[in-house]
Length: 81
Image (cartoon, rainbow, N blue to C red; front, side, top):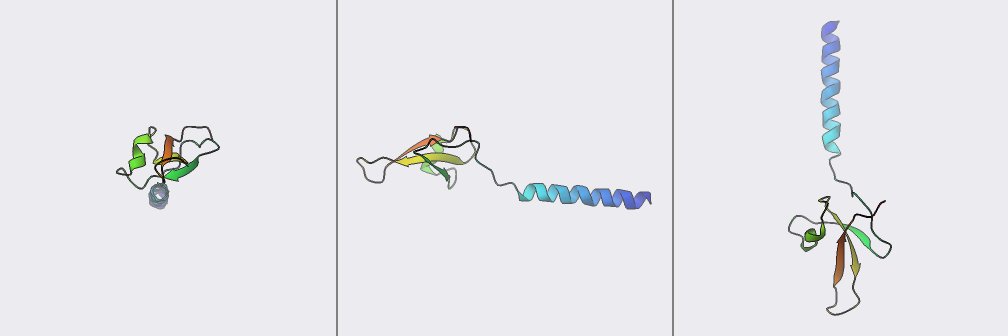
């Protein structure tokens, strides 16, 4: 009976660890101001990564309607959700 309890406990611990690592996708720490859009970085070499001060892999961007076309203002997502 004691072995069965130990085996069941070990299986439960292993399954708990497996489910914890399966959901390892990082969620954003904060939100964005109204005119900005929350975007995920494509990796550490993404040019927007310099704005990711809290290191969560998410930043806020908004287009700049000025020269050059396709310009964006990027800030860290540190606004409360």
